[in-house]
Image 1 (cartoon, helix red, strand yellow):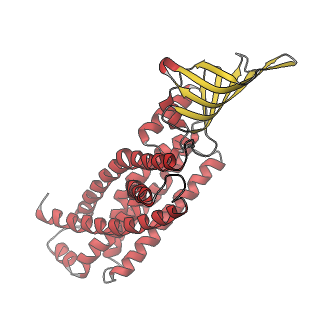
Image 2 (cartoon, helix red, strand yellow; image 1 turned 30 degrees about the vertical axis):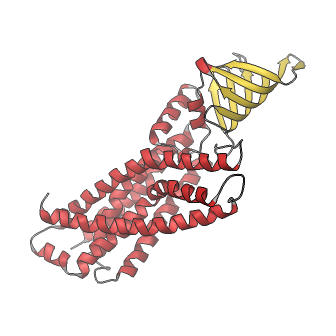
Length: 355
């Protein structure tokens, strides 16, 4: 890598960092304003809202990175174009392919940042923020997604409505089936606590057991249940797929397939996160045909507006395809990659037309 490559990369990454700072400040302001309704509930204070906002920033940075990379690249390369520095670079014999390679290196750096934020910092800090807020407001809360979580363990099907602690879950339902898939018993417990060696303590447990045409009911009591399902796994399953890392999603996909359960939602979330991360590199490349073409002499405001339009369009396309995956019986892997594939196609076509 020569001095010129580092200079162009520094211009792109510097602008991306500036745009990220602006967007995160605005995002933090909106998050903090949204917390005002909850301040004063239980022990949740203004400082708690500030802490919640700060812990949410890495996840926001990950979700906004494609738009941030596009706007920052347009501004960084655009400033070089307005100062005729791109013209001088081209005059020294640097080809469009070489210039795209410089931008791609900057994009790969941003991909690495996306992996760091999306796999290590963002989800863990976001979960910590939610837990601290929830425990400040009330003693028993649900951290799960809509509908809770369903988990199969042999002939038992477990459903929890939410997680109230690291080893505690609320609203537990247990469906016991026979080897012929007939319902033998239905039990409900107000709370389930994970113990050692797969033992679960079910509090206020009531059961209805079916035997032919008769139903036997038991009064609420405590029951110890032996299960291979751990508290850590059940905690993952009770969260929305969009909140999980790819490592957690991969474990869930393997479990659901091993138990012949539908894993479409998790497969889509797994590949969608990978596709969004790869898309960061293409958003940087997308800036090149614009700054060498119609936006060569445009101001920073015009470039920022163009970046926002393209970035929001990419975001809406992702959400539209995500809805289609859930509603219709479509291939989740193909649909997860479709927005990034379309973006890559547009980038290559525009680069090929640049002179």
